[in-house]
Amino acid sequence: MALKFAVNNSLSAITSLPSGISGGALNLISTQTASASASLEFSLDDSYDSYIFKFYNIHPATDNVRFTVGFKDGDTNYDAVKTTTFHRAYHAEDDSSTALEYRTGDDLAQSTDFQRLAGGVGNANDESCSGYLHLFNPSSTIFVKHFISRIQLIEQSGFSVDNYVAGYCNTTTAIDGVSFKMSSGNIDDGIIKMYGVS
Image 1: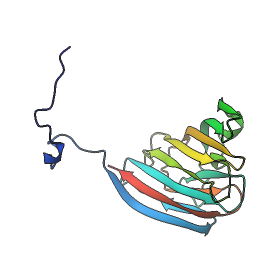
Image 2: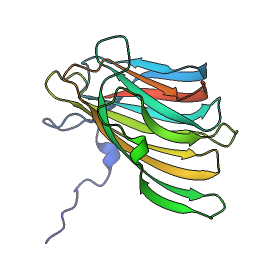
Image 3: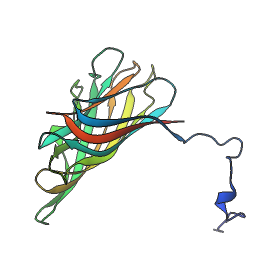
Image 4: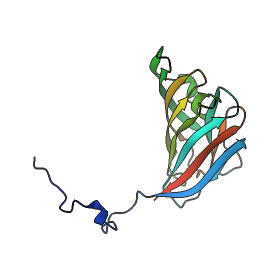
């Protein structure tokens, strides 16, 4: 098989996409900074096919709590029905324990509860969580709304944890809001940015 190379090796010379190629751009819509906040909430509309939420150093006021998400489907509550899956890998700081596991107690089956994205987040100065959540086609009135999340955190017990969550909101009503909060207490500090994907 012959290898093909770009004739123009200077990609900096490209100033626009060729006709017929579009999409993929991240457009920053909103930035919220927590300061002893009960929750951080975002409104959605049909401007974008999907939305990405990026989490930066989410730090809880209370030790050993969960960072969670809920979705609003037209009413005033963030209680859209969800079915999800949750797995994680972890490694202790002292190298005493490692694991890769599916967590049946952290997933949901047709539930209106908030979904755990990260569990056991510590509130010491060197403990927080960072990552993202990607929500696909939330304005559809035909299909369910899929989402995926990946978060790295430092647990209160000194573990580095890599969480993977995926699932769907089992509704054909548009998702018009997303809320992030701790399972107990406030979000002491941290930034969440919402991007629209065009």
